[in-house]
Length: 136
Length: 172
Image (cartoon, rainbow over all chains, first blue to last red; front, side, top):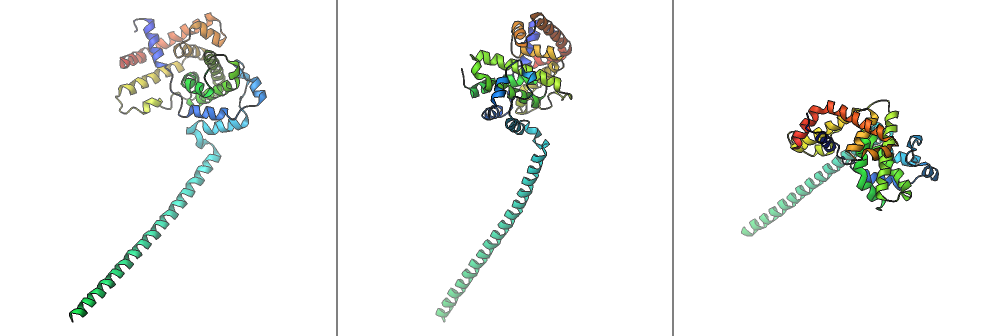
């Protein structure tokens, strides 16, 4: 199996090297720490008493934490699902409006090009007529 | 001593990993680590040095994680999400990918240990604490720590013979 126990333990140590914290973890902690806690919670919070503390954070911080953490589980919250649905509807509506605006702008540009061609055609005809008159 | 935000950045990986390897659930581990740092923020004035800070964080994290384990009724399958770095390594035969996949398997094996053995093993091999330091951190007699460590190692050795051999082969 293994030559020595030390080798086995070394393998274990290698396999248990610290992972990286999730993306944005430090920023979330720092943001939450700025919310602060009540004096009673500060007095009550010390290591070793953790099992008696249900949650050391004020309600506001708990709410923010729930919104910030478990990024993959955000859609579990009904309010957030509604918000996402509303955002999608607005995006679709805005997309349709933008598309219509593009069509109007395209049509306007086409009309301008046709007008320019008509003007050019009349100008050419006038020049042609003058040349023809001059020849006569 | 460093400022709070610097302490968070310096110890976040270690504390998150400690919580993760005890509760075996990424979301719960993140929440536990977050709470530990927030409690640290409230108690920072009472801590004299960075060594104290780290010891405090470890102890707080272990207590919170073991409490969370006891509260949890439904066990979430471990390592449902891939190892973060692993996702950035392309190709299934890439050596780093294999290394991380096997490291995941070591973690999974540790997660199968009974709770106290798991805590002791993680503190010993992730945090590199001596049995005396573990006893102090957990408020447990030294003989009990040594017993848990020995039994945990024996159990791991039995379960992991094949996994760790492969791990060693890939690493070398």
